[in-house]
Image 1: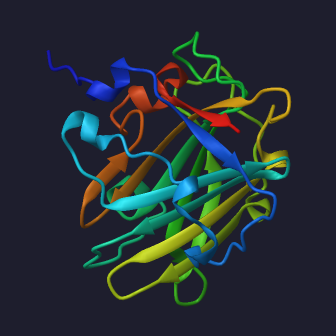
Image 2 (image 1 turned 90 degrees about the horizontal axis):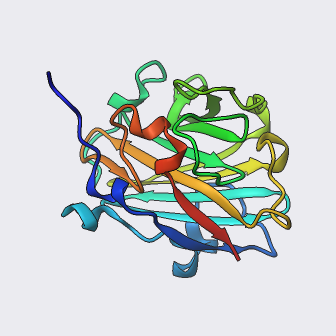
Length: 217
């Protein structure tokens, strides 16, 4: 019988300070209004890997912002039906960060963002909430038009910015609950995948007890 072992990171609990933003960034795909103080620390080195992209994160009462910069691109491929086999950015959020269960609940969210796939030329980005496997209860759906996604494609890279509004995050009350469960996976046709606390190997990515923590500062 074959078994899938989780990455070494899954045996530790990681947390990082996620900074508050007084002035929200413009969600246009240009990362000029982000600096290193918002960067999510890379964890691939724990398993002997290296990062091919930078991820930034910030919060306010209005919601959560993310910014991604992927470098060294040779090609782009977007596949909304099999996004994990193409270029895509996935984020998991638990607005209560309660790590006492291996199955997601109504406070756990899974968002998917694609650097293309919409519009007449297929060049406009896509953002949507998706279900979490084996969840006890799915979070209420976030309207797709409430998610903001900005994309900037360059010759050998791309930049993407995302805003997830508070109304799309069930239980999000940052002044009361200042820790949220967090994980991400960046899928890339050139580089493979880059993840934070756990990768996309089932069932670990759908287990909120294995996600890390973003401390809202």
